[in-house]
Image 1: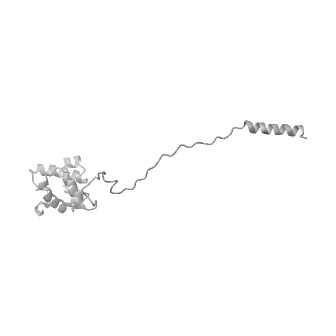
Image 2 (image 1 turned 30 degrees about the vertical axis):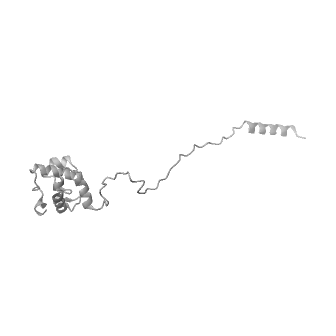
Amino acid sequence: MFKPHTLALALVFVTAFALAPVPRARVLPTPPTITIVALTPATTAGIQHPISTNTNVDDPVSVFRAALTRSPWPAGLHQTLEAIATCESRLDPHQVGDGGLAFGWLQIRADYHPALAARYELLDGPQNLEAGWAIYEAAGGSFWPWSCWARA
């Protein structure tokens, strides 16, 4: 029936197969549940926007007015200040004029006000308004430091 060497070879094969490690199936962790929420007026109702009163961030008047309401300038001076800023910079907070010496909405000159230029980022709208307030107060509560004041 079986020759001895065939039987011995079969026994070696079966023994080797029986002793070989059996690969285990990997158990993957359960993925987290992801909930997708559509952004609608109902789901965004409580979100605060940086300039919540501004409906169009490209509208320079709205951006200026929103910053002005959060500035130290009293409401009674807002209309005059807006006219001056419109004349000085066309309400562009990044406006640089006077040969690179005047900056921002109020065109504050760094060479005339080096301490303010060091303290405030004059091309940042709200900081420009704060520096402008300091100039206004130092001028005795007057707009005379701005060349556009006579036209406002």
